[in-house]
Image (cartoon, rainbow, N blue to C red; front, side):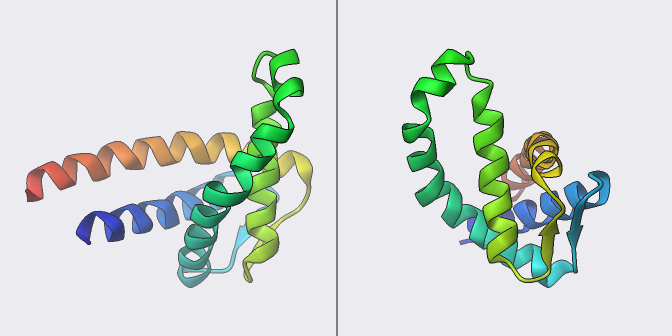
Length: 119
């Protein structure tokens, strides 16, 4: 249970930092970030695999670079479904997806170190 809460808070913190860094992304507050983290988990579990499957020929043709577009579409869908989280357009969504993956990996390493110290 502690692992789930730390992962959820890490995702919310990643969204807050990304919204601060990327122009065109706005997040109303911590509660919006927490809701967006839950919605992002659901979108990544249900919608994103379908998008990857349907765009597989284009992804192969672009040597995997189209996955950046798929990530941007997924992040845009999260912003559409979450109140208090807005993205100004397509390019801020793609740039936000790139920054979010970087920030999230850094926070994931930190959370992993904290989990090792706890157990």
